[in-house]
Image (cartoon, rainbow, N blue to C red; front, side, top):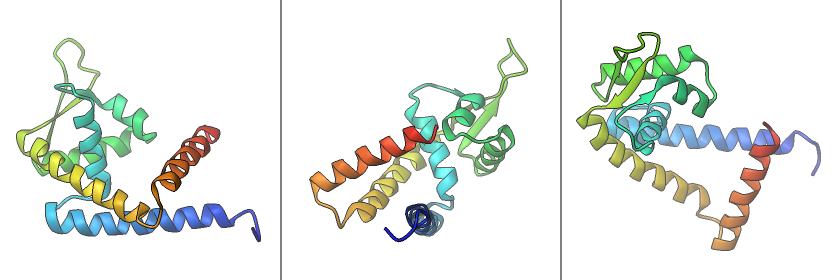
Length: 142
């Protein structure tokens, strides 16, 4: 390796290419962005009727204003509903609409396609090793 910045630079370029490709696919087919799709899928995967906005902030490691902004855009598209429970008006919860649930299912297929594109050049053993290394790198950055 020539210098210590090659890995981080390469990871950044891969991330940018994947987001660009996903934004093009999702924008054309569903009218949403990669970030919006990730939020929808995160809500869906919780398997609950509703999810606290605070939980989404922690999951994505973003500021409250960032998570709230994504939710507002998804609300405008009719894909989620934000609400405050009557017992504690300080909290904000989010739930998928029926349209959001349907779109989420299609978006998950798009995610799988993106994953296939990313890993196309690797055999099964390399894919498993790559995943283990990513988990290890992620854990070391916390």
